[in-house]
Amino acid sequence: MKKFRNGSDNIAGYVTILVKGTAPELFFQKCASEGIRVWDVKKNDKESCEGNIRLSDIKKMKTIRRKTIYKVSFIGRNGYPFLISRFFRKKPLVIGLIFSFLLFLLLSNIIWEVKITGVPKDIEEKIDKQLTSYGVHPGAWLFSLKTPTEIQQKLIEDIPELLWAGVDQKGTTFYLEGVEKIIVQEADPKQPRNLVASKKGVITKMYVSKGTPMVKVNDYVEPGDILVSGSLQNIEESNSEEKDEEEKQVVEHIAAEAEITANTWYEVSLTVPLEYNYEQLTGNVEKKFYLKTGNFQLPIWGFKEPPYEDIHREITENKLNFLKWELPVSIIETVLSEKQYIAEERTKEEAIEAGIEQAVIKLKQELGPDAKILSEKVLHETIERGKVKLSLYVSVEENIVKLAPINQGD
Image (cartoon, rainbow, N blue to C red):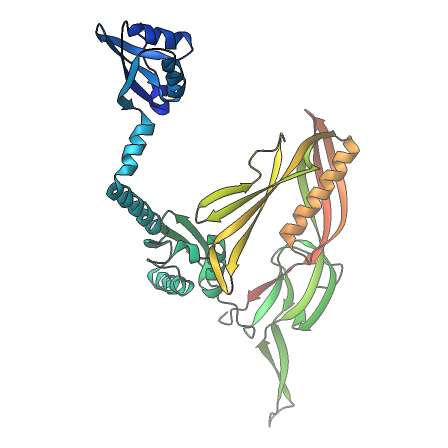
């Protein structure tokens, strides 16, 4: 009888037994008939035979032996259970490995390097100094730092020269990429200037506080047309001994000021599908909780994924505190809401209405909150491949004033 072990025997563990007695191979035959798997059975002599059985079958094997006259002894122990047992008996090695693991855990939660890119040297020094004040420097505990999002927001607030900052943590290194703000010098409010039209339109409202009006309400203007002139012509009087008084014109340049709005218009083209999808929450909700330290999260409640086909996740992190100290541990709450995608169809009239609404929202975003939409008109509409193509005419009332400095050397 000879069977060979498989890979699972090493994991579960197995022993080699020596059986002594008359016809010892019959003992292994008896074990096999009772459901004990045996392998590598070999006969040493007429009264001894050895073979392997699983660690889990020892108790069953001993029960069989009590009903026979054979003597059984263990001559070999193999597999991971015995390997682990031998390993833990070597205390110096175990202590050394545990100490090494704790040291690795300690070192992996310390910042070793801070890299700053994308900004000039002077701003880099400011950023480095500011990060140090936040506690972000080589040797700092990762547990004690704010999130990268909070750090980058604080940097933008504290360093005016920064237009944008991106903070990312990879392992034990902090990476910061910055974009320098280009500071545009504002025009001197006292510098002589005209007010010109920035776009074509029809003047609807006009209030001039300084300067000479060059247009009036209901006038049509083109881009670059002077609306209010900053050049004032004054008449200066002078006495002459020989003749009557002589008049002299004097030109004075000032900074024109006015509030002018005009009726402008835009042509907008867009496509609106007749079929569309949108998401909707069903109301089915499950929650999961994790204990988080560093980048490691340990599940403490809600171990299974809910049987939802589509899931909306909302994650909230709450730091744990002890008295006045914030611990490097937090509770992560994840709310899993079932969502479903709903397909809808709309009529051509509904698609046109939706297109007009989209066009108005887009224009308001581009023109700013002060612009006022007066009217919308559909110029052209076609249906192609399940989509409505629209060409819209949108009338807007907006500020069209643009500053144009006066060159006094002319």
